[in-house]
Amino acid sequence: AFRLFTSRTPDEKEKEILSNLLQDQLATFSENTDKANEFFQTGDTKTTDVENPARLAATTMLVSALMNFDESITKR
Image 1 (cartoon, rainbow, N blue to C red):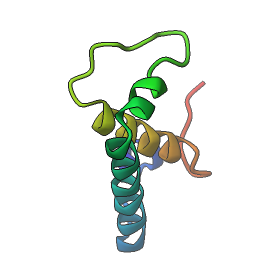
Image 2 (image 1 turned 135 degrees about the vertical axis):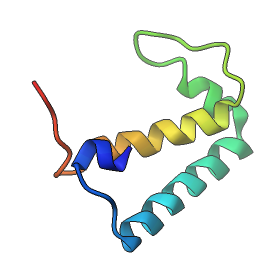
Image 3 (image 1 turned 60 degrees about the vertical axis):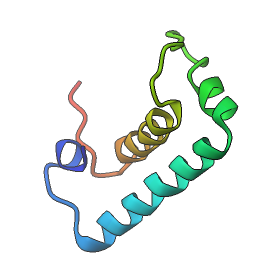
Image 4 (image 1 turned 180 degrees about the vertical axis):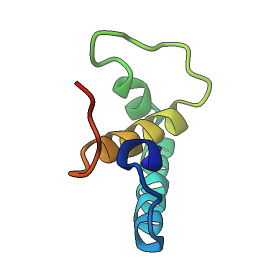
């Protein structure tokens, strides 16, 4: 995902930071599955049938962070 958004591979420090972000978010959502399920009730499309809501919520947060990088490429 990093490469798709930035057109380059992450360096070691970036890999570490992003890995830590994913692990932190996974721990947060795993400790409180209600929070993960609530996460999917926002926005236009509600998600109700998720096999692993903690993992999906954590991954969504990671991708959101990647999309907010200054160097992320956006085609309009």
